[in-house]
Length: 324
Image 1 (cartoon, rainbow, N blue to C red):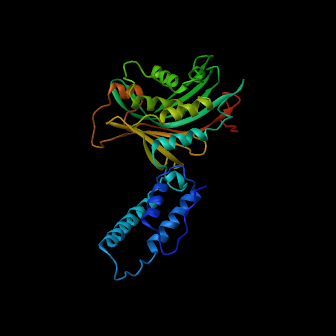
Image 2 (cartoon, one colour):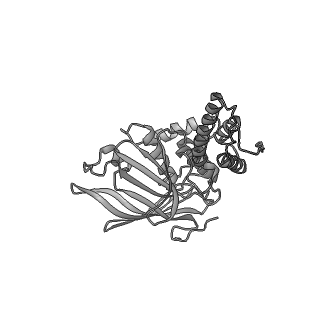
Image 3 (tube, one colour):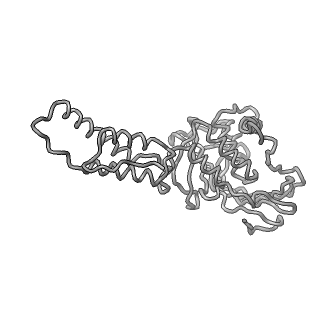
């Protein structure tokens, strides 16, 4: 429990320095932080004592120093680490990702025998036909069992496809071998192994690959939490704060840029599920065609995916998620 001295007539310079130190402690609980804020406001509001004829230059310098410190602390009071105030955006992408790791929900992401993870995705993807390439709208529905069997029903532009897959045909990323001691190092190696051939496994590429694994909700809860913790170690991630997906659903966003394109992922803050992904050109005036690496990674500017529905179902005909 952090306590603060109660004094009348304002705070001393030492008091103010102690309040400054406390504001820099991220672990301070919200109640203590609010008391520090209140103490600071008291110091700002306090009337300065009437100077006596014995006031010296040293005391005047001390008073000027105190007023300057009050001004600095007043600014600190309003930019204190936002994780302490739930209504504001987290201070950094790493903070957001670590929080999401703690919000991963167990249960429906771990299908038992005879169950499938159903996901409905809409968006725009890069398609090439007959030498002509463009961004085409798509709708994809997937049913994936833990043994990798399932179904993919998809409409891309005016073309429909519906295919069943045997066990192992789709893959289920339980990644259990990547857990255990020093699991983040093992998990990073596993992510690097998933990078498309010919693409350098930069931090940006790892972030995109992690987002892909989280996006289809096929990773089991413990692994999903580990993926968030691994993403939090990537130094170039940037928090977008509160944002919305393409359907207007509220979420929190994390972005990562390679200089030409920004990969933006929107998460539901309550369940830590991905609800949307978009790829945005960092220079809106850039009209160059996408590079082979951008196509291979699925990060062509202007493309997007929105996960409009997901949950456990009992057959490849069931489109009604049973979450919980």
